Image (cartoon, chains in turn purple, yellow):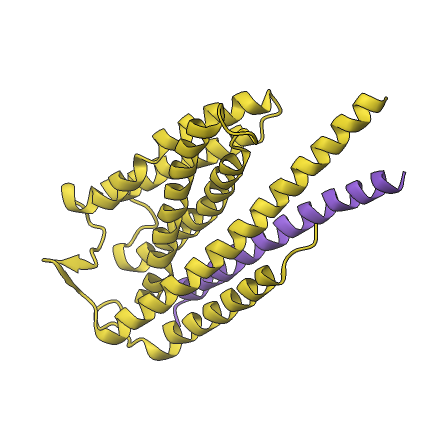
Length: 40
Length: 233
C-alpha cells in the first residue's frame, strides 16, 4: 500500500473523530459550569 | 443536557457505516489499472467533498431562513443561526479533509502536491472563506449583529460551491471527472463503494452536526445563567 494512501485514510478517520471529541469536551465543560452554578 | 438515545443510535450507525465503507475501499473495490492503489483515496475524497458542499448548502439555506425569521419569530430565529454555524463548522472539517487528501493523491499521480489550476484554486479560496466565517462566529462583539452579518456572509460564500462544481466543466483543468460524456467512468464495484462512502459520510455529518448544535444550545443556557446572575448581583 502506498504511504500517501494510508496517511489519507488516517486523515479521514482522525478528523471526524477529533471533531467529535472536541465538541464533547467543550459541551461537558459548559455543563459542569452550569451544574456548579446551580449548586451554588 | 442529557443526550437522547436517538443520538447514540445515530452515532453507532455512523461508526458502523464508516467501518463498512472502509472495508469496501480496501477489500471490495478493484485495483485501478492506471493509478494503482493510490486511486483508493478517491472514494472517501469525493464523498467528503460532496458532504462538505452539502454542509455549506445547509448554512446557505439556514442563513436565508434566519434573516427571514429573525425579526418576526418569537425565538428570533436562533435555531436557524445555530444550524447555519454548526453546519459551516462541520462542512469546513469535511472540505479540509478533501483538500488535504487530494494533495496526498496528487503527489504520486501529478508529481506535485499542489498546482494552481481552476478547481484547486477555487477550493483554496472556499476553504479560506469558511475559515473566516468560523473565526467571525468566534467574535465576542454584539451577538445579534454578528449573527446577521454571518448570515449574509454565509449566503455569499456559498457561490464557491457551484463554482467549484462547474470549474472542471467550464475551464481547462487537469482535475479528473467522474462523469465523462454523461456516463460514470467507474465499474459497478467502484460505484457501490463510492455509494457506501457517501452513505457513511452523510451519517457522520448528521451525527457531528447534532453534536455541534447540542454544544451551542448548552452554551446558550450558560449565557442565560450568566445574565440571570448579573441581574441578581
